[in-house]
Image 1 (cartoon, rainbow, N blue to C red):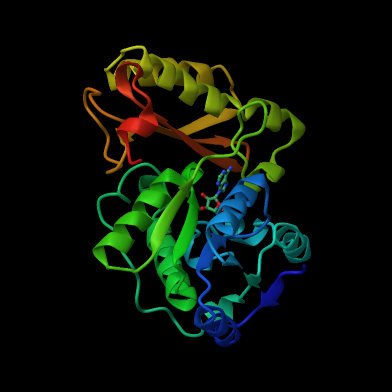
Image 2: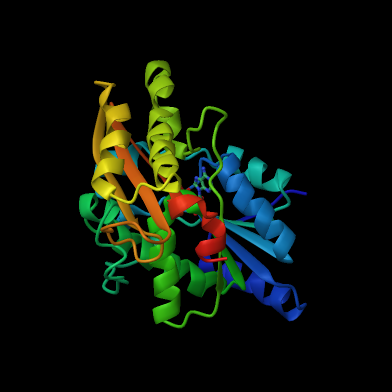
Length: 294
Ligand code: AMP
């Protein structure tokens, strides 16, 4: 069945009102489009868990800190709609920027603490833009459940904190990162990589995996772990490391000695393309998913 594409808030609210009155639960998967198997995993999870799946496709201008990145972000809408249809999505909400921001935006959501480090430090205003658009989408769709990827772990932490602090009535569902066979986390930005850059790109996940192995092997000193992980990336002159950091799994604050679950997160540039990735780690061999949030 073809997913119904809805460009306006009013039409979407109308369609969802009948779904809700029929007693069906609603799942929201917010995306910026250029859909790949990572998004596919979110959609499939939502399809299993809810009665009506809404995928939003909106390249959100207020979360971009660089206008060239916003301009060149891929927007293959008709291919995305086919992708959604093949996975049983009910509605694709694809608003214009004018529909979402008809006037100069005066209200923003700021989530302090969790948005401070990692990407927050290098992309000023990014998480404010993300939190604001996600709250708008949650208010527009009013889903029972909303699905986000572990690939953007800091974004997920920001959204969890926003939903908790602002009492938004929605369950946030975390979906594991989908990777290519060589370890590279799938991302809409991967298509900007040249073949040579694509060959090097999996080194980020290799560096993070190295850090995770050291931590599970009993190493507790962040500086020693980061040194080993960075050594891998430093072998490639094409790679510029923006950050490689070890943070608390929930609060996203850089840690001292590792005593509990942590996330090792990194951002690198290869040419004009910025890639991010992260892994959850538990010290001394404990399984991370058992010690972190369930
Ligand atoms: P984006 O379109 O990049 O804004 O991503 C939309 C959603 O898909 C976010 O919740 C991302 O975390 C999630 N996502 C992106 N890439 C992946 C991936 N490789 N695996 C799992 N989820 C992903």
